[in-house]
Amino acid sequence: MSGYCENSPSTSVIHGVGVGLRSQHYQHILTNKPSTPWLEALTDNYMADGGQPLDYLEQIRNHYPVTFHGVGMSLGSPGPLDRNYLQRLKERMRQFEPAWVSDHLSWSAYHRHNSNELLPLPYTEEGISHMARKITEAQDFLGERLLVENVSCYVEFRDSQMSEWEFVNGIADEADCHILLDINNIYVNACNNSTQADDFVQGVNPERIREIHLAGYEDRHTHLLDTHGEAIHQPVWDLYRQAIERLGPVPTLIEWDTNIPEYGTLQKQALVAEDIISASSRAHAHAA
Amino acid sequence: MPTLPEIQKNFFAGLFSRDRRIVSALLPSKTLTAQARFDIYRGSVSGLFTKVLAEIYPVCKRLLGDRFFDAMADRYIAVHPSISANVIHYGAQLPEFLEGFEPVSELPYLADTARLEWAWHRAFNARNSMPINTSELESFDENQLYCTAFKLTPGSSLLHSVYPVDIIWQQNQPEVEQPASITLETQDNYLLVRRSGFEVVIDKISHKYWSLLDSISSGLTLGQLSEQHDDMVVQAFLVEAIRHQWFSHFSTINRSSNHV
Ligand SMILES: [Fe+2]
Image 1 (cartoon, each protein chain N blue to C red):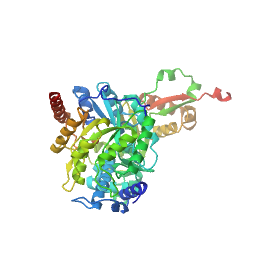
Image 2 (tube, rainbow over the protein chains, first blue to last red):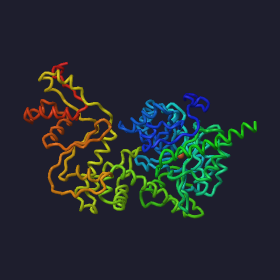
Image 3 (cartoon, chains in turn red, green):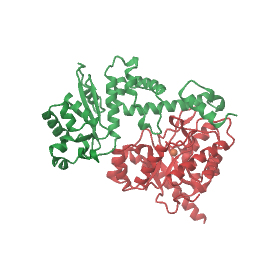
Image 4 (cartoon, rainbow over the protein chains, first blue to last red):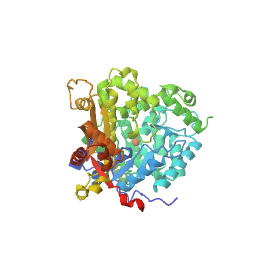
């Protein structure tokens, strides 16, 4: 498959630790132009026909490289992909020229109805080829490779035949797409499903990874919930350090979606991630 | 072993109905039964749509109180599943739903308040537009004007209520800590909800202007309006409408082109 424009890590404008763009911070970003190297826009917030959010994104795009991150593609659904959604996404890609576009390894729609939620699939060969077929279809329509993200998953299917990371690798290979590795989701799933988070980080195919997500979960005692509503927890930082050691300086994003704090709080989280990246690069340079 | 389509069918049914066939396809964890684990998804789906409704209908939420609103939202979600990949389209039927929702019958103005909030949401997300260029219009002779039709700014809504929903709306904005008490005398209120630049504006207008705008939005030309209304009224209305930038577009239906 060679028809897609390549977004190779060496030529990409996306470097270092970015922040997820949220409406609460539009004014702050435009007024203060913080030194954040890139911003990730939640695509679904910019799908309206017009209005102020699109205008803000346009202004911000004039100052920052952006990536697109969406929840609406429903790449694992049983029915056909939503062509209207993809068409609108394509228009927005033309308008804002994001460095890349990502969505999730999940499904939301069941024929005419939509849960608008990131629902899991059993980890099976059937699931791999089903999802890969639809990713390929979406990539062909959009004309570029997608990044697909591992999701937080609260159930385990009896029929799963492999680990989550084998499932993710299988899809990425079969669809020839990139991976967005969410470290928080790996940790949440490991705790909820009694699996090993390290195995995922050591097993996932490094060639395919273009971006990392970091976020905070909420401890509900019987399980961890992926709320993106607090600071990144220590075990997630530890896992991130491991990932960076293995994968190198992959562009990393701080996600915060509920109880959104001041922009400075996000920048502080980004600094922690930057420190981890530079410590790892120093260690590698030293070893070499 | 159930097939993937079967699993997805049961999973989805389990989210929105009492169907629990999916649970037998799931494993328990150390702390939760398979059922309890599946219920995490039920909770997050209902939480998501409740949040979407609360963002579109903050005034209704304030009028009902958080707990009542959330309970109402649960009932709405059960009968009105989302049919769009983007939640921006969710919640359009809430006004009608409230009309038939017995527990809110003591708040007869609630459905119209919801109509106003949906109109606001619709205007906020509508296509951008510019006010019409009047210089071209000014050069028109009477005959051309007669054949001219106007378009309201994209996303405009014309609302009518026997309750003062514009005041209810204003008094229940977040910055108003203590809403003034509102006299609910029933009288006709005519509103135009529209975009001006990126702002959403709620204009209270006269019945006459409301029905003129209603005719215009159904495509009638100025000539056709003059057949139903006094010429002076139509002229005065046009001046006002242009001054308030209610229109974003006009076109002249060229009668001489009929024989082309
Ligand atoms: Fe993520």
